[in-house]
View (tube, one colour):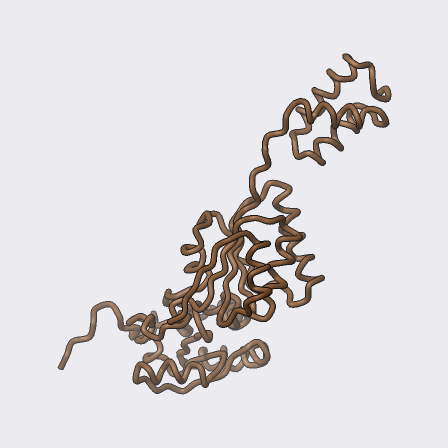
Length: 302
């Protein structure tokens, strides 16, 4: 008999055996299922999955048969209580999404929270993840990054969500942004991102780990123009570079803005409004405003 590969078994003494194991599955290439992930699926009493047909295909490719229970956005809340009760009776489940890591823009969060509240042991098997793979291939700064998941499908709501990010960036937040997007919404999403965040480097990754894997790198505006003409297919991950650092503001530009503001505002108000508009430190704007008023005798009295 052939010996098992080391460190792949999930079977443990019952006291240490997790009631729920979160198992990462391939994002495209079925060969990316790890030995530990396969062992976890084999060891489970049942597998919780988004789409039983999808997971059945994965199991069949690895010669595995297991009881499948559908767990998705539409039934997770109702089904969680029964699954928690089953775990408390001693049943053990593996949780998978259709692709990649469970819970990451996929169902499972409600069940995990309920299991933790019930004091049940939980574990996870790491594996493929489209967001991180796309980030690594994008050529954009890998850290820090913000994973947002899917943006709202409608343009108005999508622009609002992007505007919140832009506001955080204006306050000093800086990170590479990661989104998932549906193929038929990609061009519109890229256009809204360019209009809301400003044109900046970005990358569109699609069909990762599959035969037609592609990563297209360009600016948001250029990518929006391209995908408006060429309809994309497959799973899409969008990576957007951090907000570019503004060019240093010259003393002359600052002085011109302050002189204009000082014609109608007091020194403190003029310095505050100019500092906010031009993104310069308030103290710098205030000191220059004092100097300009003393030199030019402009500005309302404080």
